Length: 380
Image 1: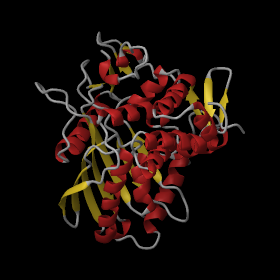
Image 2: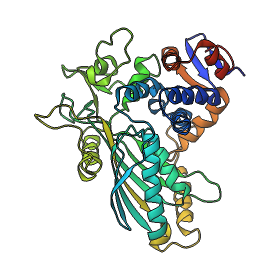
Image 3: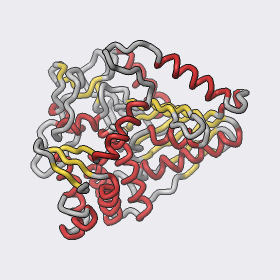
């Protein structure tokens, strides 16, 4: 199968390995180490593989711009500002989230593996990507984990009952470890109707948004992503900070309340800072992440008793009759596994414009056409 395949509808299907090679080389030539370039590429394409296109390779041009503008910093080693057996307050120093997020999670894993539980407060991180990555990493170490994230300096979500931007997309994630080679159970979701990246995917010609995803500055609810970005000048990448409209919280007051909690925990409590404040210039972009790590053994579980109870409940839940004939009741993370199997076979689907942006970013990093074709095994 060709590495890059174009269909009649303008969509592009790209195989994972050559795509990773192209993205890795792009960031390496832009100033990252080879290891960090590979880490960024693997994390971004991994999001696409699981159907989280909003946190996938569509972000390559934006990440490259942030690196060039100093918004994100290459090859950062975190500073641990406060450290004891159960808690670490960690400064990410605006490093790429794929790097400093991994370091912070590993600190939490080490503490919980030794002491049964731990809390980490990560501040000033670059974009952390798909938060499910971090719950999966903890689950691989046998730990239950909970992750609350905010986005300082990102005002793109309107609170329930409001029109004006006051919130970020503020994701929530939790992971449950399994055993015997079983995949962990991962809940990973934005507290807005959709993540901003899904609006970007729709703007670039990908999957449309739900009809209630956006509120315009006149208070009209719509599925059109354009109000979030405004008019995008020729040659510039869409910026959600420039539009007059806003994303909406999911579930009305419930999602808005959960979003508020993310700001309290990931923004205020970690010391990273909330999304915004009155009478203050726009805050520098970063992620804060408040994480809890728990060892089942610390709760008195021995052998496989915790996982056995989880398996039992999963079977009970999935025994519910589906609402649609031939349908299936899914647990968190199950859809992602199904999508991954499909996309490993068919390639990652990208809108034609999104793919062009990725290739142009490789060119801007200094790759010529021959080098790009060599990496991809053919024309892009």
